[in-house]
Amino acid sequence: MQPDIHPAYGPVVFRDQAAGYSFLTRSTLVSRAGDRTIEWEDGNVYPVIDVEISSASHPFYTGNMRVVDTAGRVERFRRRYERGGSR
Image: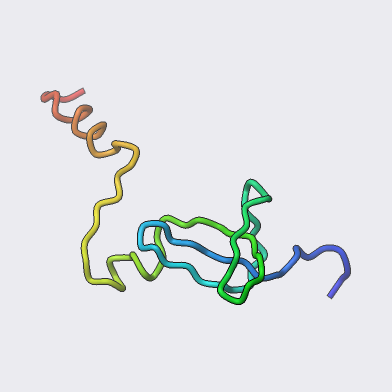
């Protein structure tokens, strides 16, 4: 491998806030704030990245349907197309 062209690869904690689930893995991702850290079960401090959906909360793995609509996209769609008539 060529030196100084690859991103840093290190331990990171991914946290699914919807399910209250966290896991430690290695990744090249870093948190946006850069200073967000969490103390893990082993007593070490690792950078943390919050995710909206993981295997602990995804409907495919859990078997439970869940609606994720934080931006109101469904309401905007209905307002736009419930007017009747064509353009």
